[in-house]
Image (cartoon, rainbow, N blue to C red):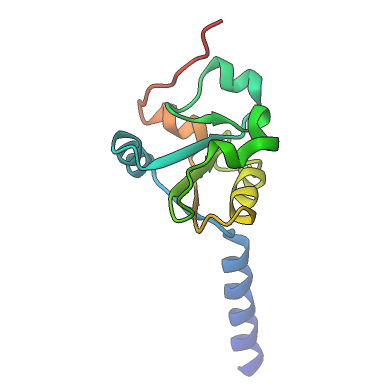
Length: 129
């Protein structure tokens, strides 16, 4: 019995660790934060995808990664949200970790990604060329 409890506890801890370092934000929560101008959104899908369509106000991580701090607010407690393609994509971690390393304390992840944003009927912005 003791070994079953130990196994269950180990699995619970592993699942929590696997869940990731960054809290999730929902599409409605992100939409509200964008409307309130209380979030900086980082698109980690690559410049080609960004140019074709990204969440409004998002910055292109591929083009801005080396100077990300200049694109982020001075307030280190400000909400920062990183996203990539969808629930199975982990590319967002690069931007989220970098923001955390820069001292930002409220870094979240839109696990739904750009695909979930579109599925929810939300609009995207394209780069005009």
